[in-house]
Image (tube, rainbow, N blue to C red; front, side):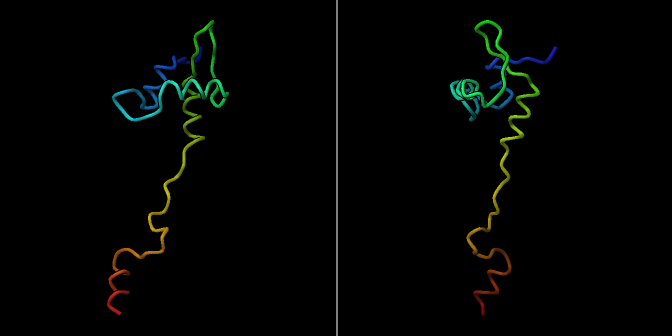
Length: 84
């Protein structure tokens, strides 16, 4: 049987909740309603599989942008440009 997590347990896995900044229970419910994340419904209760949660996070992972996008040189190059 797959490892099923309630929505509240899923929030803890994602680092949510009041103690930490993260997504809210309302956002997670909206994602389930929008079918952005697969779920298992047993009666009125909604569960997420741990594997689906990991796959959702991996799929929505964005790489960090280059810190030097503005074309402003950093480091020794900046000093040599100013001295010329």
